[in-house]
Image 1 (cartoon, rainbow, N blue to C red):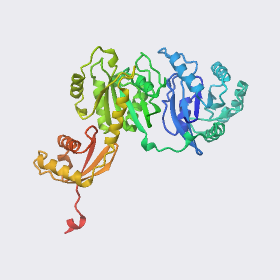
Image 2: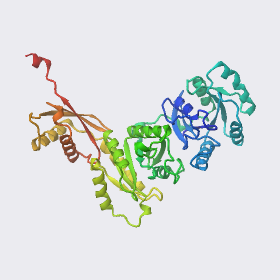
Image 3: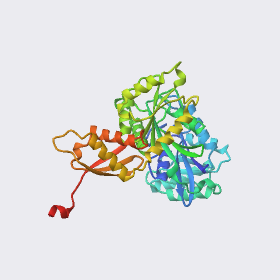
Image 4: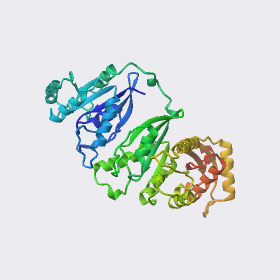
Length: 443
């Protein structure tokens, strides 16, 4: 396990902004409302030859509007107790408040090394006021501005000094072998329960209250020698139901998670019908050309399930995913989850398929001989070549690209799936008009 650095503090002192600034990209949602971060949001940081996991937590002392305080504080407790270093973050603009004392009292009971970080120090006045924090007894405070980036280099240098001795796990790893998959679905379909089951710990909050997960949480784990990163996402619902800025950012982060993933699990509850939200998610996944596994969850809550009937129903409701495999699981008791992971590995293997150029063109020509696009102008397909994997991408030169898009494109995709061992993944075909050689034109 990598050394772990936990960011802790009362609500709204800028913990998520600090994580985002150190990591160099938006990982946590940043919004000026207390209680935005609920789960432990983590990212790996590399600096001066060291690698460590930086963990953002919810605000200590949070009184949550949806009664999740117990869950949030349990996540914070795990983060603190498993940390090698704690960053105690306070708000330099607002100044010393009783909430900071409560956090300090909790941290004093721990033997974990800690570092006091005064955030939002952005003026001479702020700098002059930071020494009032010395009364907390946490040593000389580090002054930073997560928003402006001031002091971050000094903070990173201090973190490196306080990390435990270098571990073997910090050695550079080959990320090309990591299977990164996003779990998407409607609210309360069981995404967080599935993530916790795979990881083997309560890594994200599970509650009967829909919409508990707001951030997209990356969780790394290993099974049978294979490294995975599961991306738990916020539950989707109709755009008209998105109530505030926090939910807007949650949905944007979920979309980004699909784009970052190699494979996507589209999770739905077998106790409910396929909905408009499920169909919208399916359309977005297809637009991103992602390999996808459709997973029906909560089969432990039904007396009997006719899998053949469900399979037919799913293909009827999600016609753009007819090629995608279907799995049925219980994330609660682990039924069929191991087999589902194997399907994910199979899908990634298919998405890495290499098409020999000669055989690829023979398949395309035979497909053209069997059936041509219906058009007044004679369609001609000259040759194709593979230009990418994960997703599979082909470049095909034709006389008029518009003649080949739509139905004929799907016909070619199906022909390729039948011939090559990639029957369950999408194939993106880019049609390009062949431009004749300039010399030939001038002649």
